Image (tube, rainbow over all chains, first blue to last red; front, side, top):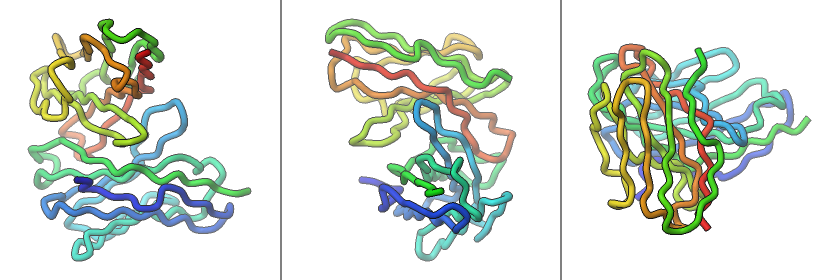
Length: 118
Length: 115
């Protein structure tokens, strides 16, 4: 049972435009969400996270939006750059408020391959 | 900081052989995770440790898999005997609970091929 779903295996976006990557989850106990980026032959790299007490978190060109009622989150990249071409993973955990949360276990989605077209 | 270090980067072995994957976490991190990535199942958590103690090994596929963390700077994942279906990329990650972000930092992975 896939508790974290990324239904789009791939996405192509023109350089300079907005990239929107989507993620859905089924476990209502999830209260913390993260996005990771992965280049070939490298490990995933942490990008940005959001707690369930927020609905938006921004870091430079990256913004994550959380819609708890829909159990949906999205990652917006504006403007998209060629170096953003990678596989993006959504991840979630359940465990209470940080930093004293009790469960470090992350459940990952299957990833979306983003290609930025120059 | 050097980041999470894994060795070897690539391993090719024959079915039935023992395989040992190694990981050195980021210094000062108190959590260590082992993941497996395959095309079919994506990124799966196998086991994780807190302060060198295994906390959750529910993701370990079967008794052929074992993991140890003898000290804060070293962990191993062993497969004995190995089978072709174990072929995957194995990642080690570490994190610091008090950092607050919940982020785990991944190593470059070990690509295992079992013939």
